Image 1: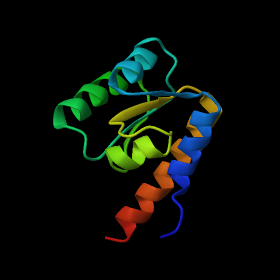
Image 2: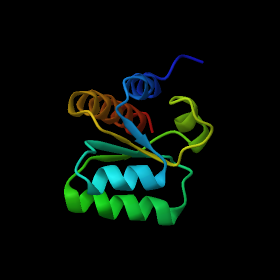
Image 3: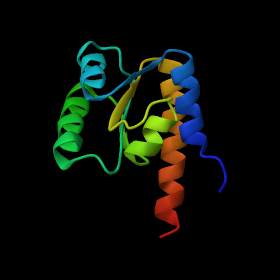
Length: 110
């Protein structure tokens, strides 16, 4: 299995101290204007997905559904994470670009 570049980039952001993870911290970062990108696990509850979708669309913050809770948590050194926010604008831009490319590849392959 080849390494996942998106998760690697999120891991780099975490090591640089530019990740707010967990629902409470992610929400705090979004409402505090510190979040530049939000990632929600694909296996998060519908309620969680809708909550962050509404919050991010209101504040015009890019939101992606990616990976599962276990993989999302592992890439930042935690066990499980349903959501996380990237709090560095440049890292968020790079991760967002990679997520968009990955999404296009996945949609193009179907």
